[in-house]
Length: 196
Image (cartoon, rainbow, N blue to C red):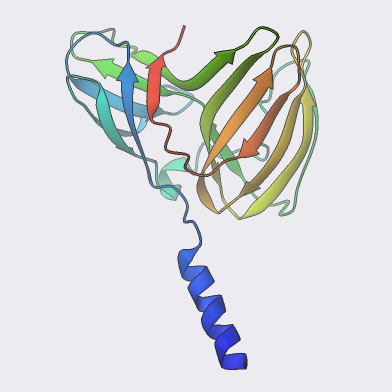
């Protein structure tokens, strides 16, 4: 009986979802030829980059842990003036990097690049819904819960179960409601567009 239990545990561990290592996507509504797509640090330096083909497709490796040493932060909430947060993590020593956009550098385009976002907007007669996908790097597996508030902005609630490494997270908001950040795993959504 113990042997069967151990075998089941090994199989479940082998099938567990692994952290992300790359982002595959296509930039919709884009004009221009080939170029590159990149993850930038706060100073605009490239942490990683990959070719962007002439129709906007790319496979971008996410930055390795060593490349993130200088940018990891003690909280997933942005450190903005006037904002307050009450966020807890099951592993208090965990550090994070939130990547909510990529940057495209089309050949012949602006040297500063073009910001790309991954969003899904839907609207009905009474509701509007926005799902903004982003990537969160965690230095350790941890559960992050709580909320942050900023003046003149909806409250952001955090309900994330993060693996050590890169994770896909969705910020969901329905018109007038709080924003909720949840772990979603790889949902196959690969559409990117130029940020407005």
